[in-house]
Structures are given as C-alpha cells and as structure tokens.
Amino acid sequence: MSEVHASSSGDVIDFLIDQHQQIKSLFRETLAHTGDERAKQFVHLRRLLAVHETAEEEIIHPRAKEELPEGKSIVQARLDEENEAKQVLGELETLDVDTAEFERRLSELRVAVLDHADSEEREEFARLRRGMSERELERMVRTVRLTEAVAPTRPHPGVGNRAVNLVAGPFASMMDRARDAIVGKG
Image (cartoon, rainbow, N blue to C red; front, side, top):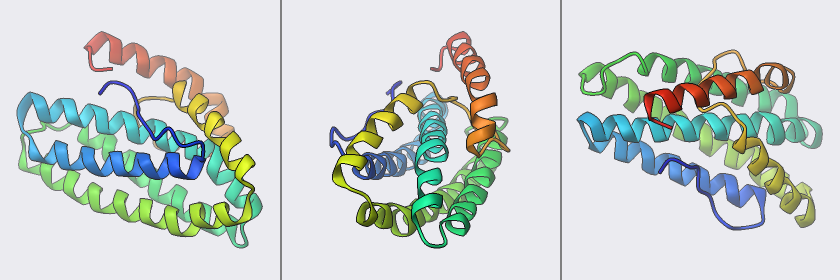
C-alpha cells in the first residue's frame, strides 16, 4: 500500500471519512504485527496521516473557518491536535518498532487520532456538508486529491496552516519523497 487510497465517491466529506477508516485500519495492522511488517505498516500509516492532514489544513480547515459559526475556534482545536500528533509521529520514527515504548506511544497516538477524527467528522465535516452545495463538495474532492498528490509524506510539526504549508510544503514534500525513495519505503 504505497499510495493513498480513498473512496471513489465524488464528495470530499465521504473521501476524508473513508481515509479516517483507512487510518483506523492501519493503526490496527501496525499494532498487530512485529518486526519488518510492523515497520512497513507504520510507514503506510505515517504517510497517510501526513498527506491527509496536509489536505485538511490546506482545503477543509480554511473553509470551515470561513463557513462555520465558531469555525476559527473549532479549527484551532483540530490544528493543535494535529500538531501534537505530528510531534508524536516524529518521536515514533526514532524508536525501534519492536519496543514496548513504541507500542505504548503508538497506542496512545491511536486514541488521540481517533478522537481527533471523530471531532472532525462531528464538528467540521457534518456541518460543512449541511452548509455547502453538493457541487462544491464534489469540486473540493478534486482539490484534496491534488493537494495529497504533492503533500509531504512525513510529519512536520509546526507546519499547520495554509501560509506555512504554501512556503514549506513543496520543499518538505520533495525532501520527504527523496528520503522515501532512498530508504525504499515510499
């Protein structure tokens, strides 16, 4: 699974919820294995989390800030959670996947990420779906797919808003993809 897969649905909300399900599955797979298979599953998980969060930061969160009452505070809470997850992912990359510390930290991250996804689905996605036309939501999925195609494949703590993503994102993506190719884990 070297590529990010998602629903063929034309709706951006369904697309992102499908990715949330893939993330849940990858957490299960990563925790269920050991050794090389755990390392491989963790790379897939890390990659999906990185591109998914970049797309949300670039496309969904700005729209939620604009469209939703209390959108700024809702988005800020999600960005804080995302930045914390990026930091933990970075720390996990330095640990041996077969240690108890890796398993403990990954299990804690799983709980935090799944809570985060649930909050997004309730507070952002459902409300955006109610407030936006079907046509807008269908157009947004193309934008999300394009964003994910060039997004960094590794967590970058502190990169969590549109302006920083626009400046740092392309360089981070290029470096991540080169690093993935060198280590053969892309």
